[in-house]
Length: 131
Image 1 (cartoon, rainbow, N blue to C red):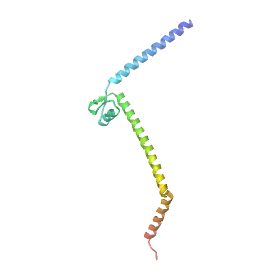
Image 2 (image 1 turned 90 degrees about the vertical axis):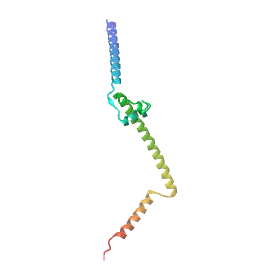
Image 3 (image 1 turned 45 degrees about the horizontal axis):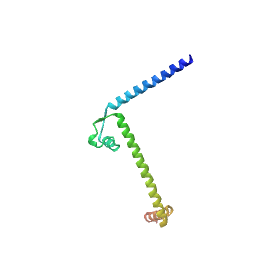
């Protein structure tokens, strides 16, 4: 008795899995074939940049929403990676610049004192004289 119930539940699970996979694949195929998103010029460039199409002339007027969403995600990732690289490069340049300034004897403290000295001299010259 126990063996039959286990066998029936296993068959039910397999059937459910097969039905789910079939319905999902049909739904996915339908979504891929429905091309409802009208592509603008920037999105055409994105589609070419991500490698979906060879040139902007090959991009159709309408593509599926799924294709466009994947393309946008790839572009977001690429732009984020570029910004990470530029930030790291900027940090390296700033470290190099700071070390060169330290070799020349420049410091923020000296610049601050010089600025205050100039500011005080300028304020003394422009201050109204009282008799």
